[in-house]
Length: 291
Image 1: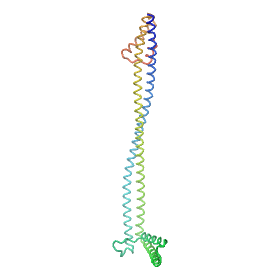
Image 2 (image 1 turned 45 degrees about the horizontal axis):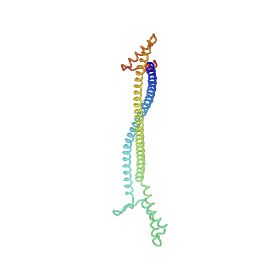
Image 3 (image 1 turned 180 degrees about the vertical axis):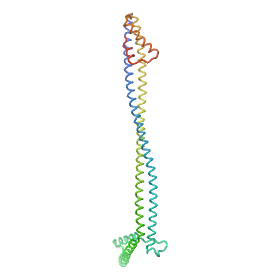
Image 4 (image 1 turned 120 degrees about the horizontal axis):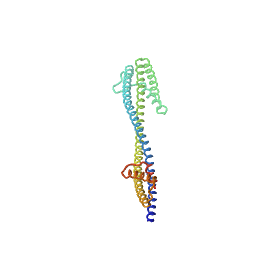
């Protein structure tokens, strides 16, 4: 009998140690579960905020794209005005250009710009010594004629108010066209910037979401391990109290009010435990302390 009691007492100590280990393991896993829950929730909150940033940049991009379309229409109108102004200027020049009279069909129109271009060409050729002898005199004469022709044409243009007005309109139209073009470029750049930022936020959403899912997986794992350790802890308690019941029966020392009270309390807790009820941590630790 003594040997049996010693064996049971050793088993009781072993089971008690196991119960303590399982309780410690369970608490550690529960703490990890809490940490992963906080981590997952924080990451999900960041994901929600990032999604809002993506939506905001998408809205900005769409607004800028709409503005680009508007500015392109304005630029098109400005370009049409430039064409009209150029046409009016050409008309004024043609109607007041003496050199255009008698010009054969297919011949290029003589303008101040074309004359200057011819003069510069001849001047470069003279510097290179291309025209010598009698040919040099012809070129010099031609250059003199060009200067006179340019002077006459400029004087004629300066005295023509309609021509001046046409030139003014052309300058204004070209300025408006350039401004419209700049506005198109600015709006397009803003739309592109918003698009690039939206893509960047999208990548960050994917990254944060992956981290949140990883935390959730770890949370489920730690909860599963905590539940497993808790089940082992409960089984250990049941085994522990079964051994204690046997030892007490063998000792025959269950007497006195305090022992009966403790015994009743243990029985009550064990009954709840065996029936599947959930015991608080304090009640479980109380069970383990009863010896």
